[in-house]
Amino acid sequence: MLGILRQKAVDGALSASTFRRTRSALVSARSYAAGSKEMTVRDALNSAIDEEMSADPKVFVMGEEVGQYQGAYKITKGLLEKYGPERVYDTPITEAGFTGIGVGAAYAGLKPVVEFMTFNFSMQAIDHIINSAAKSNYMSAGQINVPIVFRGPNGAAAGVGAQHSQCYAAWYASVPGLKVLTPYSAEDARGLLKAAIRDPDPVVFLENELLYGESFPISEEALDSSFCLPIGKAKIEREGKDVTITTFSKMVGFALKAAEKLAEEGISAEVINLRSIRPLDRATINASVRKTSRLVTVEEGFPQHGVCAEICASVVEESFSYLDAPVERIAGADVPMPYAANLERLALPQVEDIVRAAKRACYRSK
Image 1 (cartoon, rainbow, N blue to C red):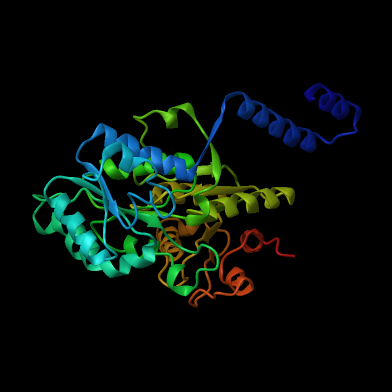
Image 2 (cartoon, rainbow, N blue to C red):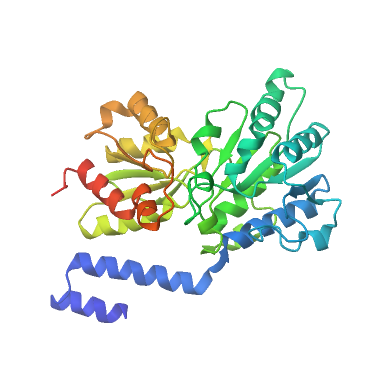
């Protein structure tokens, strides 16, 4: 195939730029077919918990329906059978109760993984998460560690209404003492959840329900039981030179699709998967903006006091003189999530919104 393309390029039937793009795609596809495996985000999370429970007897799981039902989204599938009810606890429907028990267990040196069926329900337990878990290390002058993970689906799913659709990334990322992680791919899910379980401090682990069934290529390295990703380090998913796009969770996929559309119009977009909201990888973000001179930030959460706002502030404070255009924020609408499907779509960022913002930043809006 490459030989045919090369001959067409020589004959003038194929432009040089088209040849390069097609060659790159074919080479990528060939290497992917030869060496890559795939894993769903659900299986990545399940395997990460399983391996950490196997490696450390102090790790245990608790939450509503995590045992006999194997989790509302089957993240804990098979764990009750393998580890028994002493390490996989089905709790009553009382987030305040079982979260408090989890924090107490962490005080005692255990490593609880607390599942919320949705992070909207974590509001019932926010006192334990913030006042008990996040502040204890500071208030004890470092004498008390709280190695606990709070995990579950966060943000909008589909047709579940305002009370089950909110993104809590900005809420928890504003709290000193917490670490906040937001995986996108299967590799993110495995590496970040393992890092969270091993961490000596409380970690809020924000998943996305719509990503659970998505399959992603995964390397042999990521499948190793020792694999772990660093907390606080973003990943450049796609390199570019004209505009920087920062985002997290499900919106990473949207940003990558937007980057493909922008490439068709001659705009090279760099896509940064934040992975960690707190600590935030300001160095990677600012280095990218200093290269591209333009910034588009994307999130599903509310626009006011959001993650996008924090990133914009960081860039203005640290890289203002490098900017060639105003920063762009793409966020969810400033309203509770509508139930109707057509209104729900309008309330959330879409690929075309990211494309328009990037073109505005590059003065290519027409």
